[in-house]
Length: 346
View 1 (cartoon, rainbow, N blue to C red):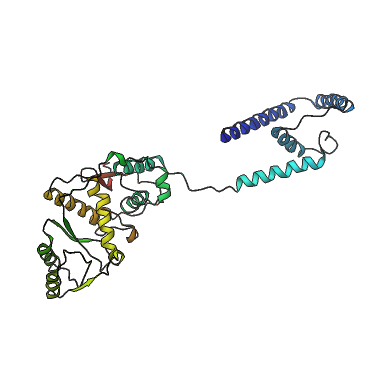
View 2 (view 1 turned 120 degrees about the horizontal axis):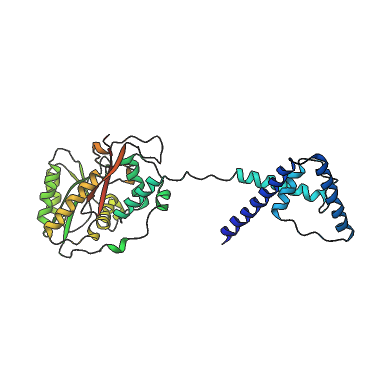
């Protein structure tokens, strides 16, 4: 209501000023003698009001502004009747203060183009688990558009998480994640799923460690799936086993964070039917995690980016190239999406 009242007040002032300006222009078409006679005629009527001691009404904002503008065209001191000269000078100062306050107002960030607003809305609608930081990273890394998370939040739709089912598969007893910490790449080197962890875990580590990339250390927690036989097998492969302290998940924070990410972005939003289904889900999600998902800890960046994501930054931070279009690829049946730029055929 306050905003509407301010707008109506501004419209009233501008309308009054327009009427005064029109009257002033019409005076130019009249002769000098007629203007002088009208001036004297109005002064005589004003003198009658002064003799009767009629109190003038309070001047409106439009009247004050008109008097200030007209006073700059002639010597107004002898013609001023209703108010004191100090009052008119005060109106003049307030007018300048308002003008410079308006010219010095904070401009803010430029408005995001409509095409980018639609793209942000589309990405948020198609990927309900994504936040503003994830969408901003996707735009920066894959489309070359730099936009702040706060700006992204402004154009995101409301909460649509109630459309998804959050279920856990009780038949899954254990899973193994191997993360590459050495180069701080956040890349998942290996994963697998089983109902019989102890002996199976040794074979999984053999498959990872005997690969092309050499490993010197294995950082693990004190879960029961890591047996003494596993430590001996790892030492025989030339790997040093580092165990985290008791009840200290922050000692292996990368892996703990990964477990939470898998649950929030994958398993909590799907209903696995069996072990084979879980393995297929995780295989597709791990490929997305390594090759298509931005990571804020990398700058943001992608652990293993492909050539399709090697985009150059646009000259305008909020503009898409006119000769390109945004193409999306669904992951896990539309649970997530990967976006890239594709040239438009001429």
